[in-house]
Structures are given as structure tokens and as C-alpha cells.
Image (cartoon, rainbow over all chains, first blue to last red; front, side, top):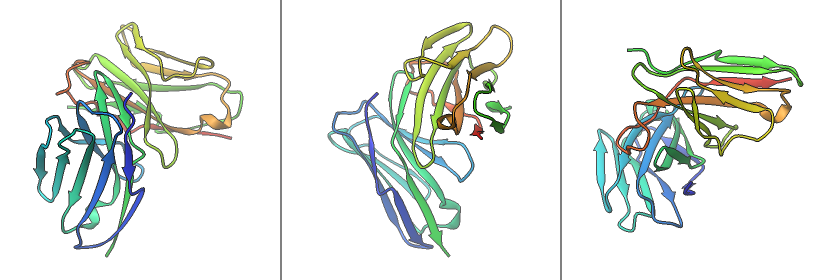
Length: 109
Length: 116
């Protein structure tokens, strides 16, 4: 599978603030998927990006795929306590998903 | 519409015992994937099965691990003679097709395996 690296590993955010988490690859990716896993839960599919430079929004979440298709970002605005969890990016080649190690987000009320 | 069902949610085994993890895919899904997640790590692909066929087991250890998806019943991930290093969360996912990038994989709640 295609390796993806995520930074930062941990993100501590004050409620109401914005933050961004990044997903990087040394090789060109055909697509990137983002998942959210709540503590003790299972990964839940959020979005898939396929096109170079693609930007998709889901309420307070903005997902971007880099022009060179080697990186992606997830930006969350006005963080809420419901945003707590680990956010994974994954590259997909056919049926095989290769996950990054995730960014674990905690929120200070 | 029931999602991917995994059982048990938690499983405790002593070293040397066998662990059997079950997964029933979503209705209408005939493709099953197993992943392993160690603490503070991402999910690692283990095996991909269709009914009665193992398509890709490249991520599964060669010894002690086996998987099946019989014609009737759930998919089973079997770990024989468990060791402490097998402690992890094991997730099953399913999809209606395999290579179509527009079909996301739907994950079950996982089985947390603890080895004493």
C-alpha cells in the first residue's frame, strides 16, 4: 500500500478555536479518504478526495487534496467537544486501505 | 438497516488459547476486510475475503492466523495459540463491491482482544 504520514500525532484545542491536521505521502496518491474514530469506537468514513486541488466541506470541516496529490489536510473551525477523537487519513488502491497513524484531538472546554 | 456486526466486543484469552472473532457484513455486502489496530496506531490491513474465497491475505501473519468467509454465516478470524503481542482491536469492514473507489468500506465496532 501507499504510505501516508500524519502530523501532528496529538492536537489539544481550546473549544471554539480552529485547527488543521495534515496527511503527507512521498508518492502520488490516487485518492485520499478521511475517517473519524471516537474513543472506544470504530472508524467512520467522512470523505473521499480524488481530484488534484479538490476541496470539500462538511459543515465546520474542510478537506483539501494537494495539487500534486501528495498531501491532504483537514481543517476544523470553531472546535466543539463533539470533535474529540482520532482522525485518520487513508489512501486506497483498489480494495486495500493504507491508514496513517492518526491525529488524536482533545478539546479543552 | 443493520451495520457491520462484530462479536464479541471484548475477548480475553490466556496465552496458548484460541481466539475466534466473528463478523457479519452489512446486508447486501459480499466483500469483507479484516484490520488490526494496535494502541495509538492506524489500522493495518490483514485479509480480504469474498464468499468462500480468500482474495488477499498479504497482511496476515503466516502462522497461527486464518480467516474464512463461508457460504453461510459470518466471516471468522481465527488466531491459534495466542501470544501477548496479539492483543489489539480487530476491525471488520464490508463493502458491496471491491475495487470501485466510490464505495467506502463500512466498519464494525471491533473486537478488543486481550491476552493474559
